[in-house]
Amino acid sequence: VNDRVRVDYEILNVEGDLPAELRVYDLSGRQLQTLLGDDNFASGHADFEWDGRDEAGRMLPPGLYVLQLLVRTDDANDREQRMVAIAY
Image (tube, rainbow, N blue to C red):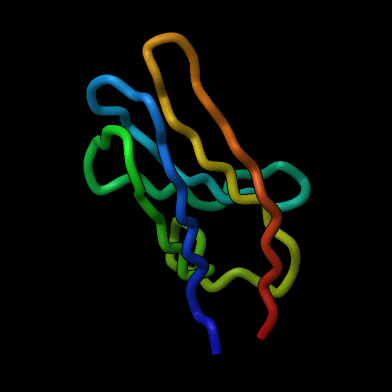
C-alpha cells in the first residue's frame, strides 16, 4: 500500500537559492494543501512528499487531484502540473 506521493524534480542552471512549494488542488480548482520546501535550494535534485491530507489534516476522498510544483525565481514563477489519483 502506498500512503504517500513523492514528487522528485531536478533544477538546473540556477544561481543562488530558490524557494519551492507543492500545491494540491481538486478538479474544481480549490487549493487543498500547500507543502513548502524544507529549505531554499540551488541546482540539483529535490523532492516533496504528500500524505493525501488537506491543510486541516483530513484524509482526502478518493479521486483525481492536481499537484502543482512552483519554483519562484527572480524573473518569474516556474510551474509544473501533474495529475494524481487517490484510491483506498
